[in-house]
Image 1 (cartoon, rainbow, N blue to C red):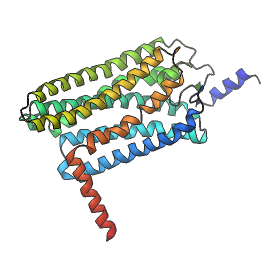
Image 2: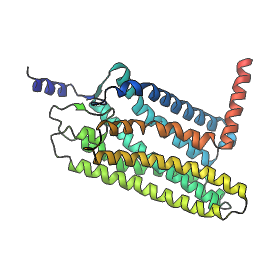
Image 3: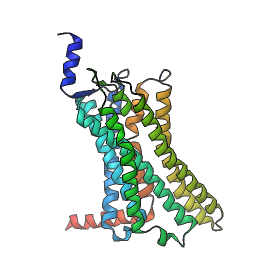
Image 4: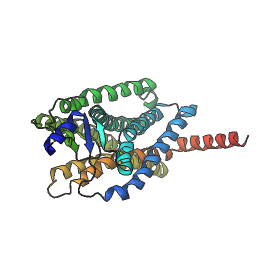
Length: 320
């Protein structure tokens, strides 16, 4: 049997092979430990944040419900990507079924867009809290959060579901080795012997429409916040508002910038090692997830106090 026939046979087995860091295989060794630690930090921090908000009745407010939504999205994204990447690093478990691959592709695209949309809603929440504090309780209500969550879900599911569907309809002609650690849309579509222009255009247009519009609205919100903060007379209030909103904005910029760098490295792929976008793609699913609960949650006084009360309660229960 020829090599080509072997390759065709492997296609009939309905599996893809995820081939991480083709040109820099040593990266797997030094990446596995920090990636594991980041994964544990992301899971632990988001888990603690969710439990604290759930158990502390004083935190049953719209702002903290939005934080819970962000934590849930981070947990799902991490669980969708990182365990499989670590399985490849540690045990060389490269095969992934077609159905699992396209499911991972959908979750990654959809939940990243949902996270961006949640950042936008949270920026609006901070805008109303700082620029219109007297109207805040009447605008940012539990009903507002419910409507925002439905909007985040429906908008991003409807606009991202065509991505895996378009890839699923392609013919792969015996090529099954994906040069990536994850089932990224273009990494998979590139294996097809069909024309992938529509896939490429939809990914580009959809990505920039969703993330670009969110980023513009986030930037506008923080511009109005900054203008309102600088008008405050009390120095302490200015410092506190700038510290809180500044850290939020930096984190959102990090979330957006790493995506932008990922896109640019793909455009300039002849000048950059193909393994760099792969690395950025993996890190983008774990670093924001590890940082979000720390920046948004632990730095918030009410959540910090809630965590301390839960720790004291758990310590007293364990002693009994």
